[in-house]
Amino acid sequence: MLRFSFVMWSFGFLTATSVCASSIQVTPVSFDFGNVAVGDTSLPQEVIFTNLGDVPVSPNFAGGAVPGKNFPGSQNCAGVTLAPGASCQFTYRFMPQALGKVSGSTSAAVDAEMYGFNFKGNGINPFLATATSFDFGNVSVGSESAPQVVTITNVSNANLSPNFAGGAVPGGNFPGSQNCAGKTFSPGESCQFTYRFAPQTEGPITGATNFAIDGEAMSLSFTGIGGATDADPFLVTARSFNFGDMHVGATSPAQSVTITNVSGDVQSPNFAGGAVPGGNFPGSQNCAGKTFAPGESCQFTYQFVPGGEGSVSGTTNFAIDGAAYSLNFQGNGIDPFLVTPLSFNFGETLIGQMSAPQFVTITNVSSATLSPNFAGGAVPGGNFPGSQNCAGKTFAPGESCQFQYAFVPTIEGVIFRTTSFAINGKTRTLNFTGGTGTVPPNPSQVPLPASITLLALGLLGLFGVQQRSRRT
Image 1 (cartoon, rainbow, N blue to C red):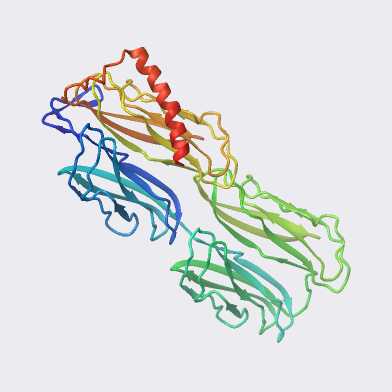
Image 2: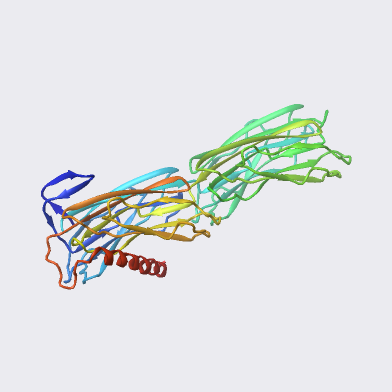
């Protein structure tokens, strides 16, 4: 808790001419919750209030709630007495109400001293709907094709009861049904929109429909030919796929185009093409050189491997005996690493002393084993020396590493610093605050020579990582 009566700009940081020391340390103060599905709830992150003094204190806490529903908070601080070294917490989670990036802030007071907390996260789609385009081939007028299915899957970690709207195809050529409305989906559970082709006239027929899941619109398209004149011996479907959100460096589950001999004769076709340029949607197939009995099938199989963050689309063409087919793909690359917290308050430390370390945790939140490149992370000026155990590390899914920092003030006042580091070229920025108080030195706290300070920092780093590993 830092009070100062006069502030001036000096060599890139703020200096206070008078500081009133407090025993309460408040940190961290800024968090990133990463990618969380709409309707799901993130893991908690905490602001910790610690009594660094030598006597018990009973501070007055006020505020701390986050307006709206995106970052709900709770706390166990009100009315507590904190013994020396004891802590209490304000706990926050991310519950995205809509797709896209969200930020929020709140303030809390400790004995009328205000603190600001900042939060950010990204709401992602909890439902994957695929495939999105179908070819029913040749069907006689007055008859009906075999069904084709759009599968809707809950890809979040929460039980969800979404609202479905729409999905019928005007005109009656592509009647549809579904088993989704009113359903509660456990994580990984699916339902289906099922469509058939019932041509009412001869010749090529197309159709399209839209439906929505909790207001998020999805589009489907259909094609078929009424009558059997010049019928194609092969049916190729589906034609378009949505791979949804996938972490950069990971590989999606496969989706397949099925090629079926719908003629009454044995076929030995020639296949050409089918690869997707650029590498985001690699493909394979088991069709080339195959002889097809009537009704027999093969597959072109594709996956999504995003090379970067953001929406990606791709198109490829292939031919069967010279008859051309076009396929379309889309997906969205999301960050595989969660980096949090982003800002720290080291409180007040006597000149020449070193604070306890604080940690930035970097976690692989993807489903793939990753070996990222780390660059940067040092804080210029020496007031916030840092170290890390991330460089050169291979991360299994869910595995973490740490950047750790301490505060070593060299002048009186409030000191602010910023540093940046990059993971695979994506930059993260960290902010630090610390100050020196006018409290007399504790006899047990003797200022350390520089060489001993650096040695102590290294030891703190070692023990700090071990302690954090035990906590996690």
